[in-house]
Image 1 (cartoon, rainbow, N blue to C red):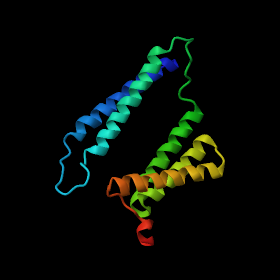
Image 2 (cartoon, rainbow, N blue to C red):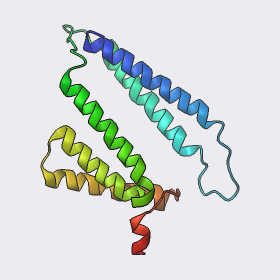
Image 3 (cartoon, helix red, strand yellow):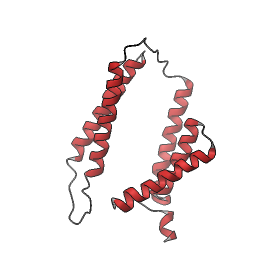
Image 4 (cartoon, rainbow, N blue to C red):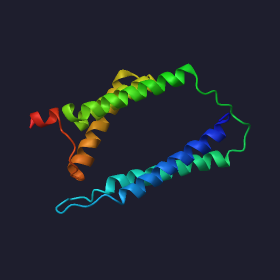
Length: 156
């Protein structure tokens, strides 16, 4: 991939492929009696979101008609950001159970947005708190999905 257009076409195509695989895999999830929400709902939403996002990326790459924008990949900064993101994701997954989904999501969003964007500390904290609150109220209260509460469980 030497140009941004090619990178967009390949990346968007891969995202569409992952979305399609997610949709196909979600069809094999069996529903259980007494569930308030079909267990296929969330994977299907993620699959459709991947297909739409990937389709948008492919479309923007396909429609681009300007001068080719060279892509210098991989550079040291890009590799460092990818490695930091991978480490943060591993820590995130490892801490979901003991700390709880909403709190670890808030910490992950704050830390990752600070690292990638170098935003002001108060802005990353507000963004992290907002994401933790959304996760708690949308996924755990509204949709009644059972994710670990961790430390929040001890407060109640």
